[in-house]
Image (cartoon, rainbow, N blue to C red; front, side):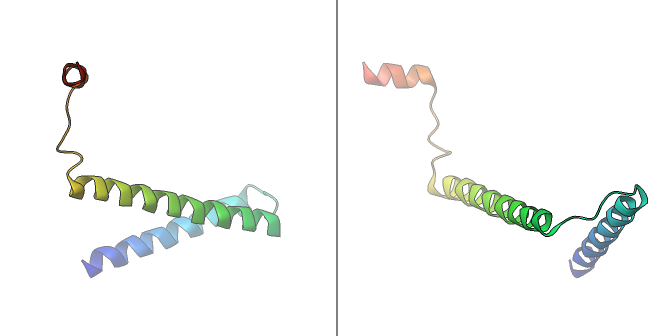
Length: 80
């Protein structure tokens, strides 16, 4: 497992380095402080949103909400 995680970390680092090299190779302008702030907020916000949605999915599966699925016809018949 540690070898897989190490390989994933190395691959991620190489990907970031390649993207940085490509950014410089195309002659793009450097990112300003405001750009780095916006990027950081976007990364943290995306991570928090995905963590929250995963927590909701696990909570739903553990609490049994996924087991009590019924069709719309059954709900209508039960009401009347």
